[in-house]
Length: 313
Image (tube, rainbow, N blue to C red; front, side):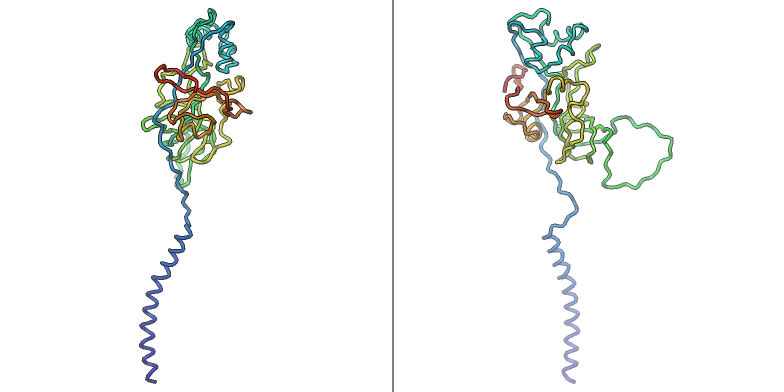
């Protein structure tokens, strides 16, 4: 009878103390195992590459006329432009006149020893940059329907399967507009990899003029994208470069690509040639069933700032 009250007096404080201690220990142990198991529903952000410090450069190479050369043969042999006779046709004298201006010599009066300036036809450009903004590719039309309030969703992304215009920053102070058709989910802040067709110089009466303007600024330029990728996901169903119109990829069997070497641009495509990082490159890519690949031995040029020409790499 004496021991029983003593046991009650000891049991009550012990129970209260243990309950308080357990309420702190159990959550701590749970948090420890939760942390160790690394349970997280948030995706790991993709580290963004550094911006380019040098932009791709539109340029030309030099060629010295030999015996028996003519403009069509030179363009086909040196520039892989097998469609030259179709693009520059005597049936349309304005096109041949424009070609003579571009080459620096009259195509009807070529002599051995003359020097021509040859440019890449319908050139593509390789770019990487951060996505800033997503807009519809065409202006929105006003619909005579009342506004319906839709609850916002954090995972909402625009539908770009019919086309979107993306604002992409490619250097610290240069942005371009990309016209792209893709089924990928796009969010501002994503890193975009793409090849795209450079806009060609406008020549009156020559709608399929094939050369880009070397003096055009990249800042604000509108380009049509192909071979499109967002972060680590490539869109295998995006528009192939051979379907950008107009171009002569199918006829010529390939395309010229302009880019800058480095992990933030041209190196992303793993072409098998080597040049110091930051080198401005012009390379011929062969078309394999509509997909562009570099084959060892195909022409590769680097831009020489002093001569302002492309020279053999």
